[in-house]
Length: 253
Image (tube, rainbow, N blue to C red):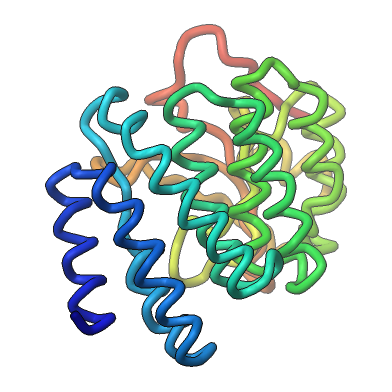
């Protein structure tokens, strides 16, 4: 059996939820690929780590755990613990562990992933922001609110929004995400848990003319209201007033 045929067979096992059979099969395929060449390992492992591992219920997710552990362990051994392949496998394993409430181990992996990307990419790289947000979610699930907040000590917003961010946070708003939610005209967008009185913030904080109101009430893509720097495409966003739950604090100036 060729390696590619073996990988195709492994993927069929995964789709059929035959995880016990998939573990030895993927082990053989990855070791055979590594014996051929690093390039062959990258090709074969890439097919494996792309498998999404999304399950309709917790029982199926739990049964898949040995497979994800095996792939992570093997790629750490064969390609190096800091290799892109091993880190992708770590990300897959962390997501799986988080879904089956093994939060402590998921946190440990997410911390390692964040450390990995922050030492290799600029702070506004999408990979850094995604790793940080993923870790913050786990911290909050574990009740580690201060550790989650600490992740956003420095968000990297441009100079036109920095004073507004400081004011909003000093007024009691907490950062819940720092990401790039849109594919165009979007750099660093900081999301907070409070409604923003945008007009008063702009006027009373004397924000520069490049700061404009952004109001989006989507259907399938969420809703938000905040202020955007039209020069740097950075933003501070809160929930939309029309969709915010009762009792949400409003930050004004």
